Image 1 (cartoon, rainbow, N blue to C red):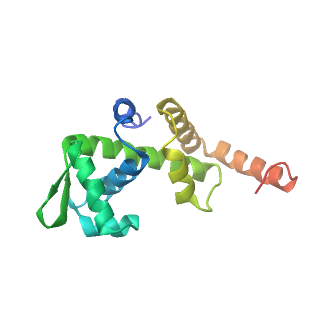
Image 2 (cartoon, rainbow, N blue to C red):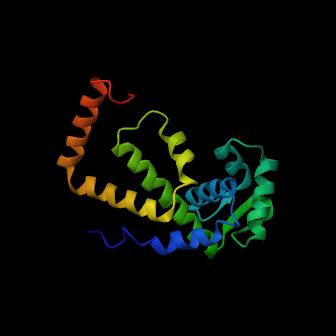
Length: 164
């Protein structure tokens, strides 16, 4: 087993503690800021607005709210830099997204994968997420079971037992 598979369990607890502070929209912004700043260490407000398909003024308002929570710093010329707290929470949010996206892929969801992931990620509990992560690892380490599941699902859909 890979040593860093469960490194975010404490992080999920941190996220739970901050759940009262962060709305789903704030989480979406923070996840995108974290994801996009991994390469350069910062993100510009106009790029953030473009990535989230919102107006720059809307992005600025949300960034100011996140700044007030100590999650990021909004500097001159529209530069956004995450604080250590922001980086930790951003990492957790991105990990949560990846775990859920992998799970949906494992169960054969490929249509609207991003939308499905976004719909689920704000409502899954840390314990459920941990179980999903374990199931993902199980399928990864036991490819024959993944193939058996795919065959079973195909048969069930053919028989009309489930929706496609």
